[in-house]
Length: 80
Image 1: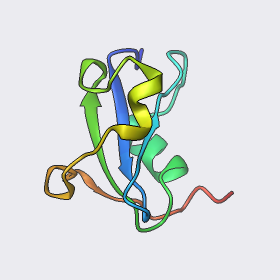
Image 2: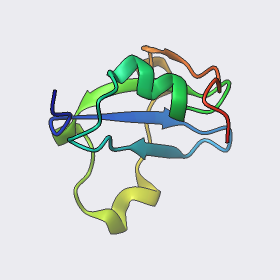
Image 3: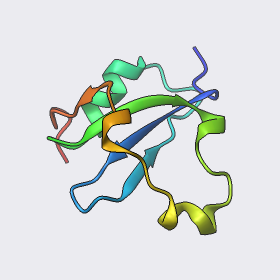
Image 4: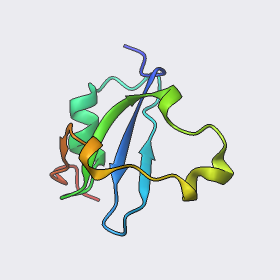
């Protein structure tokens, strides 16, 4: 299943936002990707790709309201 229309946003402890972009050919489900890639304790949300700023120079200024990051919290099960 291609993942090209979705991304995972994560709220970092420093208040910044990280974006995980799964590869289209990734055989994992989004739930498996979250388990593997979202660090322990980080809130996350799966969003449509058009919700993420396309201008990478703006990414560091992008903020997300913590109340909107509602899909779960990473468990860090994937290791490092």
